Image 1 (cartoon, rainbow, N blue to C red):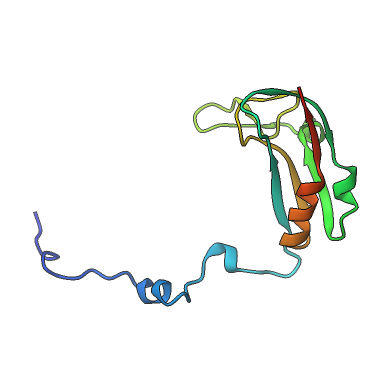
Image 2 (image 1 turned 120 degrees about the vertical axis):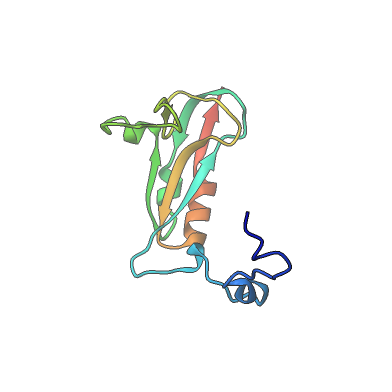
Amino acid sequence: MSTRYVGVSVARFDAFLKVAGQAQYASDFRVPGMLHVRLVRSPYPHARIRAVRTADALTVPGVVAVVSGEDITDLPDPFYGPAFKDQRLLPLDEVRYEGEAVAAVVAESEPAAEEGARQVTVEYE
């Protein structure tokens, strides 16, 4: 067992930048034409989805698209999962846990995506 680091401070190369608030994170980067996404999440741990209404969100300036489970049914593989691909990217008929994403709002800016997400109406049973 090596003891060469015992009693020696092992500093991270970005420690000073983080402490000084100058570190760059992935969310800090901007590129031309970049789009932003905000998810509309279920407030219920289990419920049937009666309707996802996206028309109002599409009228928000800067909103490019709103995607729900109905919009991705024709994908070749609309499933994901850590071990088994058995979970839908966006649910079609029911949510299985509180916080499950029901729709995604794509916009030119973060504020537009947030406002668009507020305008999506989901009817649950």
